[in-house]
Length: 318
Ligand code: HSE
Image 1 (cartoon, rainbow, N blue to C red):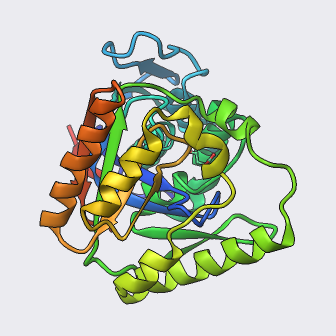
Image 2 (cartoon, helix red, strand yellow):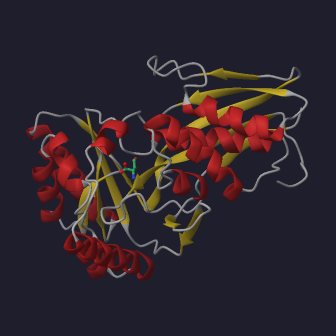
Image 3 (cartoon, helix red, strand yellow):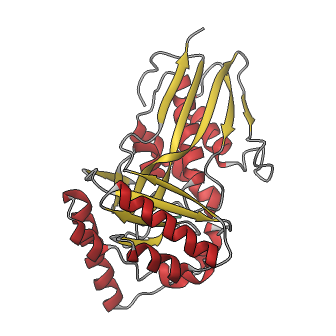
């Protein structure tokens, strides 16, 4: 934490949807999309307190510190301990329970908004543990594979060690990512309860090989390596049955030229990666059609990797 710098009076911050796991990288790998984004607007209050206004479009979200945005904002605010207060307002575009990193995006936007409002004493990297505390609140697990790319952008690999360390990998920007969200929800906490507690040596070796191959392909832009590496032997086998039409949706994506297709985070959103924007569009149509045949409407998002992460889009001094 450094000395506080310039302190705006009002600020608007956006944080993007993210694809966690990317197939082979369970709890280790995540990538930021351009859209959708959650937004926090924050304004300074003369009294020393934090006020939170949730998005009325999501009446099911808690209005107190059980809401991850407010919870993380309060943690950052208490750590800075400023002599004035703030009101923060959440605008949610990433639906809760979608597998698109909605809780991480709300928390990252809230953390950056409070930090910036009070002179940016924390670096982006120093804000990550606060955002991960929000993930623990939301799902019972302090995984950072949505939080890191939401905050920092790009392709993030969690590095083993005592401290939470993120390697922001030099990702190729030539791939296009399609995320299709069907009209159903998966609760991350419940999806984590399904995970195997033990893995066989053969599964470990195969998954480690896939992760290394996938990461090499994403860094170098080699489609063939992405295609060979994008498989998940750990989470996908136990979670896929909770996504109606999963096998057909994946088959539709691969038939249209996807290099790989799997579950985004803990689902139900599914993602696919493609060589061109045109192919990504064709893949999105085919995945949506397959979900329709399984009885589900869906929304599709296509974007290249977002290398910026959480962004301050407006700030003003009064
Ligand atoms: N890695 C986490 C999981 C992401 O798969 O449970 C949750 O969005």
